[in-house]
Image 1 (cartoon, helix red, strand yellow):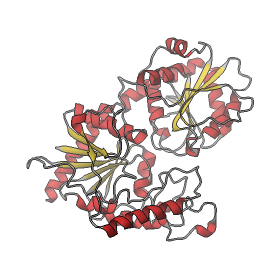
Image 2: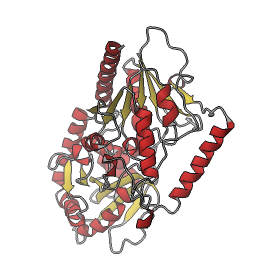
Image 3: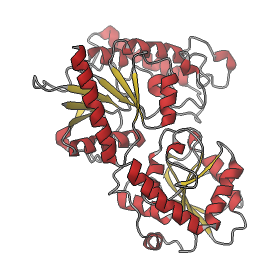
Image 4: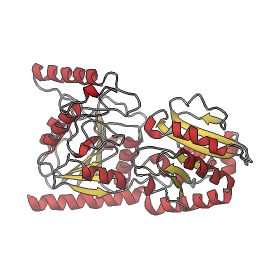
Length: 439
């Protein structure tokens, strides 16, 4: 069996998930090959060169089609001009001029069966040429890292449910002007194009969180025969584990008796990640009988106007594994105020390092933030309750320590990367057995 793993990114949460799984599969003896866009550099990737290859860019074959693709890109950029920056990206299913599969992997031994495993493919593959180019004997497994595979273009819908009926009148394309909201807008056009590309595809959809699974099942995107599975992310627990808090704080120049809360995201300023709500909730720590410090990691600027709130320190975008463990382990609590999210790796890494979580009850977060077991949950968007939970953690350090120990136990029991790889290996075998029967 060969698993062809396709990812359009080599960094960020989706890429981290794909690469970790790829490495774990190879560690189990699975012939996993990872393909990524040829325009990207893999100089920082931990993937061994023998198991990775660039997906070579292709051209449509004639000038007219090449011009059509370029005009399409210009049209999409024009349609998105002025779109609110509070949203995630909005992408077209035409991620390249052409992306036929059969020329990428080279010949397979006659007895070797092939599985296509897709991860984040936006801005990477052209749906219209990629899916029809796949062998009918190669089942497709698609892991959903965001909502884009089943929407007309958005990556997180911000509560919109129009993907359930085919999109159109997209609030993310309106630029604040209701006149621009038309039934046959880009979101509907892209939705229909995606549906057409998936016709006849033997597809299994995998969601890391129960929330994402429910959203995908409710979408009108996938054919009725599509199979859905819930396989949570795993992480390498030998890499993410508790480290002595005193030593970590000494290295970071933080006093032992300081209450430290931690917040991090790839892009701090994204509205969906909830930094604005977190800053507002910090007033719940006013008048505390101990010093407070906030550690923030990720790209982007902190909100400037913090009023009379506790001091915060940004450590920037952290890639070094030793420093990541140190930051997680130095904190009393990790704050996850996301307003919409799948199964954030930051939270998984936190509980693996023995640090409990205070979060909003949103998306896939309740899958691993269990009140009274691994952390505390506030109602979605309830700033006062989030602040109250932070204060509880600060005033009851023994509670925070107990939740941290239980959080590590939960991570070991439910989020080991080898356990995730084992579930995928079983899924690959089942899909290949089914396709063989059909043949």
